[in-house]
Image 1 (cartoon, each protein chain N blue to C red):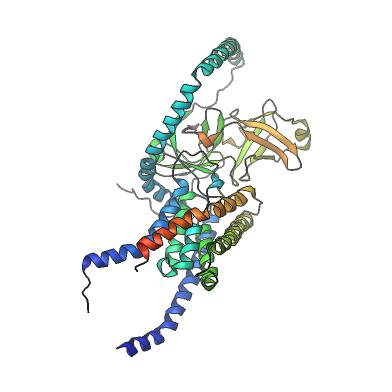
Image 2 (image 1 turned 180 degrees about the horizontal axis):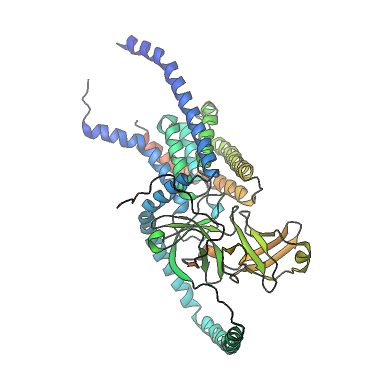
Length: 172
Length: 296
């Protein structure tokens, strides 16, 4: 039986928590003061992409508890109702977990199309929640805008996730 | 050995699955519970939020530095290229403004003499804090700004936030070093306003879109409003000083009377938080948990 050194174990732990850490950083990106002058609804739903990707390809590395925590942090920092993002991400996880076979080993465009459905559904869910809880119809353009930019930006983020997956996470 | 691990796995796998299912359900329930608490505006939620933002403030400031430097460089280059043209424009504007200054001085003198003859009581003096904008809200369903001043700098809940062009919103949450501005376009923003020159009270209600809407106005008042009218704050409710510019009427149509805010906060680096000591109907959140600094 091979002995496992402390460095190896540390290395293993770090690789395991990488998806969670990356997603946590993505949760903070929308509030970072980049001075981009972009109207804010245009910022894509980055954590949704991360939850989508990791649930499909390595659900063991981004468990529901981590998804919940990251969603709460994003809600607390970003403003708005606390728990909405957490709920959206958890539902995404729950809905996708059983559908993984549909996507594994299939071409990229299928994952992209799947994400498009998820992005639209997530925007719809959040819109409905806010409308229901405040009993008023908020402007819909931002929900549409965020879903659109999310879908457009998905390949870029997916490329980044795939690289992280192959370089850091593949061995655990 | 191999068989035994397999047997153990076969026994524990359904158990693990059940635990995972229960945990998932619990987390969804927790999210729903938090949403309900947050909607009910339980003070603890806001306190945790401001605590977290206070901790995050130095990180945001550190990240902002290189971005700001880059931003400044591009602005410098653009300004250098337009220098001659800008100079010409400024000369023309200076001339125009000098005429205005004349008019303003004349009016000020007239105003003060009228005030003294009528013995008008002036509104309370204002105190202000200038703060840098740290972050725009990242949430798709909230219109908020995070600023780098909090209770330590004397920012209070309900204070009015302005940029050079006009009012942008009110302070909704205060941390120790940070505060949040609820922008006037936010779904939850309701400001007492009036049309400049009229005495009709109305409410400016945000809906998260770019143009907030005038509501609660009398029918005869709405008929007299035309596109281009200036919308200013009203002293009704005792929450705000009267006469601060908010914007102009942009559209009168099926969606109601829409107002274009005068201030553009998307590019604002600094905001001023004015405190007139007016609390209006806004109540301080009741203290549920002991504050951190008790006795300290």
